[in-house]
Structure formats: C-alpha cells, structure tokens
Length: 221
Ligand code: PMT
Image (cartoon, rainbow, N blue to C red; front, side, top):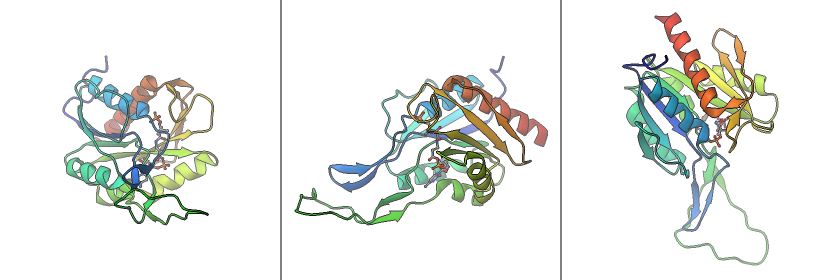
C-alpha cells in the first residue's frame, strides 16, 4: 500500500558507526551496527524511492535495491554525503558519527611503554550541522542518541542543526538504541509537536518515520 508514496524521490540515508584511526592497528568507534539505518534504507526502497545509503563498517549485506557506499571515517562520510546531498529530497542521518578523532595518526604501530599514555583528540566535522546550513529543498532528519534529558537535547538539536525532524532514542532504555532489533523513538518536529512511538521492530520504526516524513511533505506542498 505504501509502494509508491516516495516514487520519484531521492532519499539519502547514513548508517553505522565511523572508525577514527589511531595507528595502523587501532581505531576509535562506537556500538552502532547499522540495523536502524539499513531498515530505513530498505523501507524507503519499499516506498518506491531512489535510495542511496552511506554506511560505516557493519556486518550487514547491502540492502536490496539500494545504492550502498561504504566509508570508514567521519571525514569520508562527510565527503560522500556531500556528493549526494544537493540532489536529494530527503536526508536521514542515522549514522553514529564520531565527534572526536585522534589528532595525530601514527604511521607505525604505537609500542607500549611504561606508565600512562595520553591521546590528544580533535573535533570531526559535524555533518548534520553542515547540511542544515546548506539545505535548499531537502527535508533533513537527524537522530539523537541520548542517555538522559532526551527531550531537551532533541529539541536543542532540531534548532541548532536546522533539521526538519529529530528522531530521538534513549540508548540506555531496554529494547532501544544500539544493536537491538527493536527501538523506542520519539519524533520531534519543527512546529514543536512530538510523536512518541512504542517499542517496535526497527523495520516498523523505519516505516513510521517515513510515513511521518510523507505527511510533513504533503503538508508543505
Ligand atoms: O546502528 P544500530 O545498532 O541499529 O543503532 C541505532 C543508533 C542508536 C545508532 C541510531 O538509532 C541513532 O541514534 N543514531 C544517531 C547516533 C548519534 O550519533 O547521535 P548523536 O546524538 O551523537 O548525533 C546527532 C545527529 O548528528 C545524528 O543524526 C548524527 O548522524 C549527526 N552527527 C553527529 C556527529 C557528527 N560529527 N556529524 C553528524 O552528522
């Protein structure tokens, strides 16, 4: 029934973690498995959209029918996202992008020495913020992974990133967030309203997010 809701629309989805190298054998990353973002890419394809997925390292196969591009670092994700952004109608940023990376990447493996070891970290590019600044026609959806004060942080992200919707999940709630096959999310919109969804499989969460985007786009047209 939803098979043509996004027909003719270009949807760009990001998913998975990023890896920020320290030396040839070590990196910083996070617990994202890509399940939430891949579910969104699959659902968007099922809704008839032309879908591009930019993914950090995951163990998931490329979703059927979706152009999938694999990257590693936040910088690489930024560059690929920028290649597709201007042509996109809807952008959904599910990826768990590193906020910091090692400032110096060692060419050779760092050898252990007696005592403590300090790593200097520098900020990575904030992709969502850059998109919020550059958007023209795009409907921009960010995620918010929080452990506390979910509503306050989500509303703050909506404003500060100039997003059209924020999908917030409390990642310490059972059945929500990283790695699980289910999620519990609340959608925050520009008009100040919010929509709380119950515990659902990520495939269903994905459909609900897309349906809400379709409603918002209808309202705009
Ligand atoms: O992959 P799974 O195992 O299924 O887990 C799903 C998930 C928990 C990763 C997902 O539901 C989720 O919450 N994704 C967002 C994770 C995140 O990085 O949230 P954040 O609150 O740190 O970032 C907010 C938004 O800014 C996100 O849309 C993120 O993609 C974006 N961001 C963050 C940092 C950065 N440098 N650039 C960005 O664009």
